[in-house]
Length: 102
Image (tube, rainbow, N blue to C red):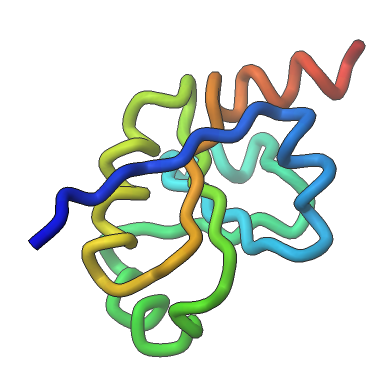
């Protein structure tokens, strides 16, 4: 079996791709509720099975965390579950929020 390779995307790349991708945010409830990327869905241990059951594997997915570290593991997990086009957001929500302010 080939090792999974997680692709990376920066906030500008996400902005260009956002209309055709699904953004999943793996941060905790408090952080997600305080602010998140528009149209992002929160992916938690509690809703992971439902997400896996309902999301087409050909859907492009961008995983967002706080700083772009945990999202790499989550993106790798999604690839292992059969998703074909998965990105980790470099710098996470913090980088996205800073890019939106500039």
